[in-house]
Amino acid sequence: MHFARKFRLRRLSDIQENKLSTSQCRLVNFTPLDPSLVVVVVVVVVVVVIVIVVAIIVVVVVVVVVIVVQVVVAIVVVVIVISSSSSSSSSSSSSSSCSSTGSSSGRSSSSSKIDHMCPTDAALHCN
Image 1 (cartoon, one colour):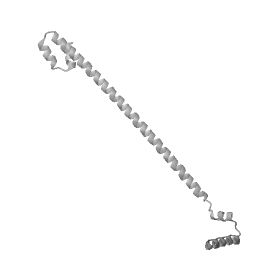
Image 2 (cartoon, rainbow, N blue to C red):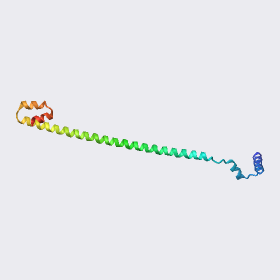
Image 3 (cartoon, rainbow, N blue to C red):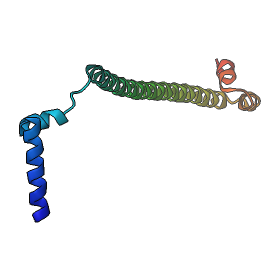
Image 4 (cartoon, one colour):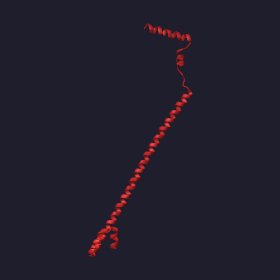
């Protein structure tokens, strides 16, 4: 306790000798920032923010493009499946009508000939 009191008195005498008040002592210890350092920090922060914003925009654009491509591919696949199923059903219906026509005419040799033909050839043969 005696040491602390002695230290305070010495500190007070130092301040009085230098004719500095306590507030001036605080100002002496404060070193102002260099203006060029402030400019560098501001530029770095702005560049980092711009890079982050651009990265977010790029990610959003890539996700949107991937979704659009998937939707287009799905539509194309559905159209191809529908068109192929409709063409196969129309060819099967024409071949069945052709074979029934061939069997109704009573020609056994021509009906056996139709069985070995393609559906389009059979339809041409029946007509």
